[in-house]
Image (cartoon, rainbow, N blue to C red; front, side):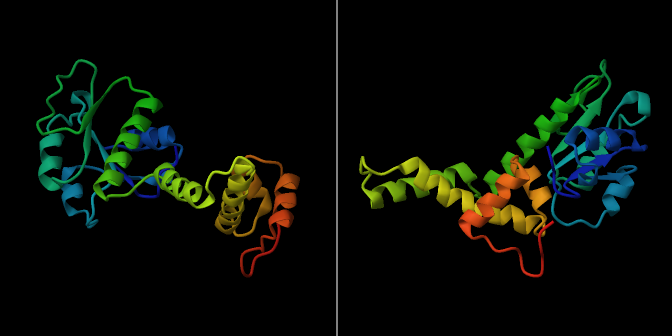
Length: 206
């Protein structure tokens, strides 16, 4: 699961937890680490992180950190990382808990939940919701005639902007674009020709 750079905060006295979270997400650059609650209070980022993992393990001497972190940044979604035998209180209101030993799937699950809450809070809608509404409008305009090859017609309308967007994202690098799309490079080239997709400005093939 890829996360945007700097979206995830880890509060821990060592790099151990930050490295573990970054590897679980498949995106080490997504993780920002601060060494303690005092550093968190001084952190200049204005908007909240997507999610924050706080080392609250008794064995790390951090069992008092949750309350201090909550006081420093009360709007954050804090997940306390605790020892297996530690009571789930944390000294402050928790968004959730990660109890040792935890695995990558649990880290990803918390990020997924936090992202969904962010999206709903902003009033954003998923791509599926937007497409559903557009398909309903399309069918009303089309009249849903039995003679229309609807799947082929709609897929072509979707495929062209998808390929064009990925090519722009990769700076025109067709090898990377094919890998992201999950298709062979020759297949991608054929589709580029079929749809008449021009390379991004100032970029060539690769």
